[in-house]
Image (cartoon, rainbow, N blue to C red; front, side, top):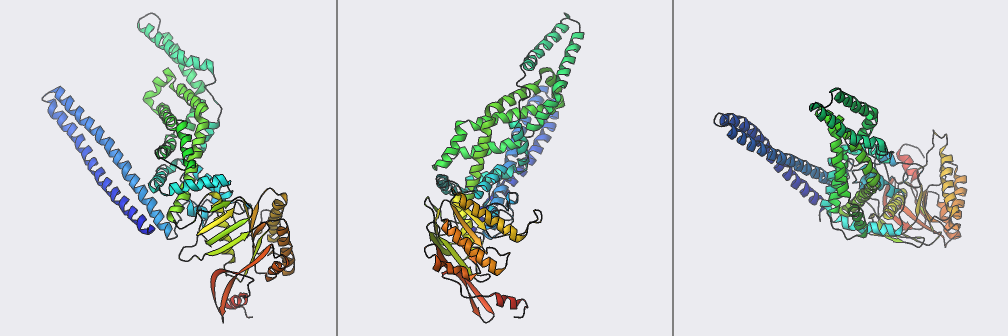
Length: 594
């Protein structure tokens, strides 16, 4: 399947549907105007003939107007939905050409102290997160970020993989969830306030005396009004009861207003999850992970409870209507609705957090499923328990366009096995390491990988690639390097974690002699501690360690072809130590006389 043609056809299809709804909606606009004019004209005309005929005519036309209004509003929503689907597919089409700038970058998840996310560009402007992210809710974004920041268990990875395979074939369902998210994209800011309400202590429902008074007092007031009308009691008692009602309203007005601010205007936010859950539960699944998530909704009656919450919040908003104020003061509807909301929170609030979590997982899985759909040749990796093994066939970096991507085979098998990768400047060492690292992150999160095949051990990845000084902490780049290396040494000494490391140009902040001694000592120590990994370096002397520790160290390199002052790179990994250097040629090219 030609994906570009596929998405282009979908864009065209949704554009046609959007235009069709627009034409239909324009007709409804004229119909509604005609009905209004007809109500006025025919109402006046038939009034001169018969009052009742005029009433019936206006009534029939008014009912017709209401029906047309409902159909018009439905058509407007369908037109907007087609527009959202058009945008979603246009974005996918653009992403195939390398433009995915409209997806969130995940910059807020950047952590330079993390084991690997900063070095591997997991988050940021040009990042893996931005490349794969199709979530629309804050909780979905957080879930996807968490999955990329830490490896899952083997069973969890396998369950996610099965779910990803099934979801990848459900493009309309996946894009339907994106469409709902875009529909309510402006309500995500309501989440913190809503969560605050879920976690807050009850204000009204625990006050039994106040609750009893709320239910009894209105009927006493009504009885006094009736008795006054009958002449049994003086009217002063009515004014007394009015004062009591106003005093009670004033006593808790601040608390009521505060609670109302927390839950009011949350209908659209709740509607997002109602529609997402409705779409998800309306789908039949076979993957155990998806079946379990669906069961979490159906067993707890999520749709029914959320719908009830929506209706109660809407009723609470009646208090904003001036016409409703006298009724509200008389019957204390504010209190009663808020008491009910507190009761709902106590009984179902904990479930709601679980529903948010489940939808977040579905969104994260959908992001992975979108990768599989857009890249059907990418492999579903095999995760092994035994430490350590990596077997990669034609592995490449996902962020490099396919037509420019150079893939490599690579394997490492056994505890304490370390590959020393040498090569000249710009030959591809760092890109190769990042290709390995990024695909490991995807594999251990349950996502497809940019490779023909990949077998990998379930382990903790650790990288050392980008080291810079920190003015805030007043540390030099060399001291920052030492801190990073100490972190690696500490976690390997502690044991309990199976580490795979990627080191690039160790101890670059010191002189060449110290760097050479320190680098060789570090590699020996890691090998003796049975830690596996890859170290990339310009220092060819590190290649001598293969002779010293042939059962632990293996050499590989990236080469450069030099023809006079011209250079070419094949970016292919070769066995052995690099023998070609290009630094002097590069320096000559910028004007340094050598």
